[in-house]
Image (cartoon, rainbow, N blue to C red; front, side, top):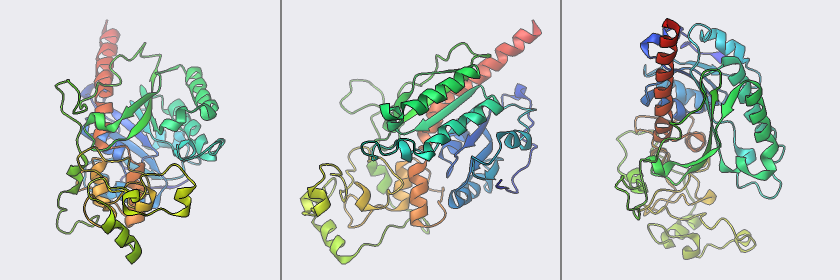
Amino acid sequence: MGNVGKNSKTKTKTKSKADNAVLACDVFAGAGGFSLGAHLAGIEVVAAVEWDKYACETYRKNLIDTGLSNACLFEADITKLSPAKVKAVCCFDKAPCDILLGGPPCQGFSAHRLNDAGVDDPRNQMLLRYFEYVRVLRPVFFLVENVPGLLWPKHKKFLDAFYELADRANYGVLEPQTINARDFGVPQNRRRVFILGYDRKRLTDVKAWPPKATHVSPDSEDSLPHWVNASVAFKKALPGDPNNIHMQHGPELLKVFEKTPPNGGSRKDSGRILPCHEDHVGHHDVYGRIDPSAPGPTMTTACINPSKGRFVHPTQHHGITLRQAARLQSFPDWYNFEGGIMAGGKQVGNAVPVDLAKALLKPLRQEIIKLRKAEKQADAA
């Protein structure tokens, strides 16, 4: 059933809702991007569920051991961990869960899965498992994050099933929103789908979500700040930073990088055309350099590997470091990823960008506090 760490204290989980404490549960929590964003938005994550060993180490060391969070971390396979157990251990019966967060595994919905690949992928069932937690915890809101491929016609039956389950449980669900992280101050061009559900027994609609963009294109006439460029990721690392590491490349690849023009050069510029490149019209960005004058490319689970995308340093002859990848996901420099460069890259690529999570959750916190006041006034009437 998984382990519950030493942090499974409940003293902070029985708060009265009168003190404006907004409580959340983060499933598929990963390294903690959603949870850190929730903390910055003024939301207390009471429970987190994650099965990956290194992601759990990262979550614990950065969020729990530092005292930033009192979350009870369940190191468990969510398909085997009962939501009723999470509810009982975290006292969600006394102080109910307000928000359920989660980014179910998205590989089955990825755009890299060609033709019918990914259809009926067992990982897609995780989206439905997520709803078991909605049904048991009865949050005011639930927020799902996934890749845009979730909306493709070939995956329609999973999304339809999710909406049907929500309707049966008396939850309203807004239309899926495709949101780009760069529009909220994240130095990365990252499009993801977010689905917001709300308890129809307590809310009739949600007008405050999604929030309006905080950043715009430099070509826009709007007075908002411009997108944040990738250059912020390439400032000097702090002394002794354990994540200031990059892949070690062989002599042949180093020569390719030396021939690749700085600040956005591609593999075509360097002459690296492999047989697989000749037969495939896609993957133009592999072995390409990041352009620091624009938001960075989407950080994937292989973001530290130049063979998997435009992940070469803008001017230096190697892939980006784990710290640079984390900065592109808006993680602060004190946030360290455990397990080495490969495990760390996977955690970074899977994370919800911290600043985006904060922006998306702030209006939900405000709506819950407003709802709570209205309900209190109605009870007193």
